[in-house]
Structures are given as structure tokens and as C-alpha cells.
Image (cartoon, rainbow, N blue to C red; front, side, top):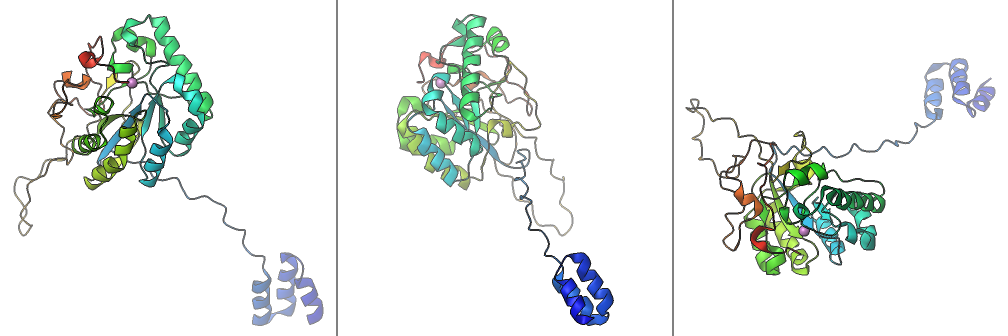
Length: 327
Ligand code: NI
């Protein structure tokens, strides 16, 4: 009987059950437990990282224009080493020669976005020409990235108007900090501006086609991290705040922190004075704090910070800010 039970136990779970019944007693049950098939291996993947809530976390969006280019791969290495996500506003004409980098951007969690095909001033083009600039670039990025179509557009020079906005038909992303890296081409200066000027909810403009710009990014990331910033894409920055097609945005101001109680509760410690950068909306016009900025950024015409997620006022810009060509 016992030998028959052991023989049966060598088979499936049903046989082991029968063995437990027939052999009886504790020994039989223990044998059954030992011979139960092992549970299947855990194949479930860990959940994706929780999305950042920029209403409660000090966020900044670093953006890189006019690429991709020969230095973009090194920039991606730097961003990866710092676990930082960025947004790339790319020119359609540069996408194909660096299509592998565009794919890598998507795989590594960056946002791919549209900066026109060949960097014209869109306000000087017909609506049909604007649409063509946008669509060709959308198609190029989608092909290179493996099917990702950008949802954001940055008009070259920040030049837009109602007609351009209507033709582009995507949210227009400007910036709150113009590092002017394309003009100064100095890594130390870029790093200083890039670390000191961003405010919570800000959008910072760099150009990854310039070597000194890419050279400055390790210091920018380290300095901003020291200041407590989390690096997010533009879409992550505006998460939960729907953006309207054709409307311009230059930052995402988080809600003001709740008002402090008028008097401390008995026994509570003396409240310390609040420090800046705790989420209070900025009141200074973006771009005006740059002592080295010879010209105001397009955002500088914004007199005050709008409510969270609200669009920047319609830009009346008709040409490149300061008449310079940021290429
Ligand atoms: Ni540009």
C-alpha cells in the first residue's frame, strides 16, 4: 500500500492528494506538501514609476532646441546618468540623420516635440506653409521614434500670432528662462545661468546643437538638483492642466501653498520665515533676472505670472526677439 502510494505520488498533484488520503496521518500530509508542484515563477513586472506631481514637487522642464545633432548623444548620456528627463524640440530636417537618437529619446523617457522643419519665422509664412512645416516634422519624428507623434510645438524664435497658432493647431511652448546659450557659447556661463535662473514650474531653453551648451549640462543638473529640482518633460510639467491648441505657454505655476495659521498653537515651535521657491507664484516677468541678457526673452513681455496652467497672453511677437537668430 505504502509503495503504491509512493509510486502514485511521483505523478501529478491529484496523485499526491490520493497518497495523502490513503497513507493517512501527519507523515502523509507532509509528503503531499513536499511533492506539491512549485508555484509558477513571478512574471509580473514592477509597476511603472509614479508620475511626478508638480503641484507638490519642485519641477523644472529643461528643453533643447534645433537638434538633434552631433552632441545630442552625449547629452542623452548625461541626462541618463542623472536620471533626468528633458524635452527635445527638433527640426524635421535634422531628424533623419540622427534617427537612432530620436528613438533613444523616446525609450529613455524624454519628450519629442516639434520645432518646424527648417526653422523659418512662421509669422512670415502662409498658413499652408506653416502646416507643411509642422506636418513634415511630425511625420519625420513619428517614423524615427517608432510611432510617437509629438503633441507640443515650439515656433522658431518664439514668433507666433493668431494665424500661426491656428495653422499649427498644437499647444505652443515658449520658455521662462532663455539661457542665450546660442549667443554666448560659453559652458561656464551657461551653467551659471542654467543653475541660478530657473524657478519652480519653469521651462528652460538650451540648444543641443552647440557643444558648450551640452558641456554645461552636467553642472546645470547638479546645481538644480542641489536646489531641490526634479527634472520633468514639458507634458509632465503640465500634467492635469490641459493645454489648448494654438495657445502659448511659458511656465506652469504651481498653486500657492495654503496660508499659514495666524497664530501658532500653544507649544508649537516658532515658525521660521518662509523661504523663496516654496511654490509661491513668481511675480517678476520671466527673463528679466538675467543680467547678461542684452535682449528680453519673448516671455519678458508677459507682465505677470498667470494662474496655474493658464495660457500666456497672446503673443504679439512678429519677429525674432531682439532681431537675433538663435541657431
Ligand atoms: Ni530654434
